[in-house]
Length: 163
Image 1 (tube, rainbow, N blue to C red):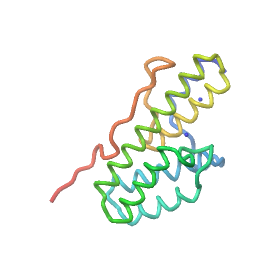
Image 2: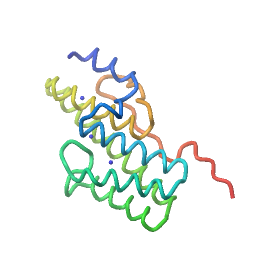
Image 3: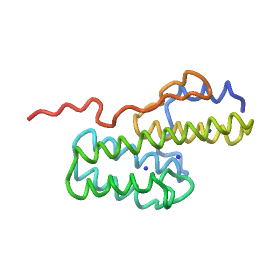
Image 4: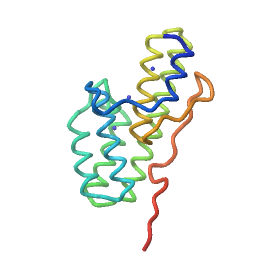
């Protein structure tokens, strides 16, 4: 299912994430992930399966969160297996794990880049965090400090399940 100056990077976090029509591969992946999360929230198994297939079509790469051989790739495959078996509760849980791990990874990279003084890499890490947060939550939560970005909540938040 991937960060100018510190003040402009932090200020940019308050804006809504990337436009799905922006055109680059990372943003297309974020848009596909957003559709998958939306389908999971709605409980639409068929749409979630289709959206997972679309997100899978990007394959392991360095622009997105599912690097080959990574823990995130294993988390992503677990999500696919849950969807394939029709286990929406499991898929939501796997998606939450995937989101939490990805945003944590994004934060770690941004913090490392900031501490090393590599502002180009820091800005890219912030952009990756914004895209991933937008994909998972439809918005980007504001940071408390440049090196201390907030973590995600569960994908299933706001789901009202009635028997």
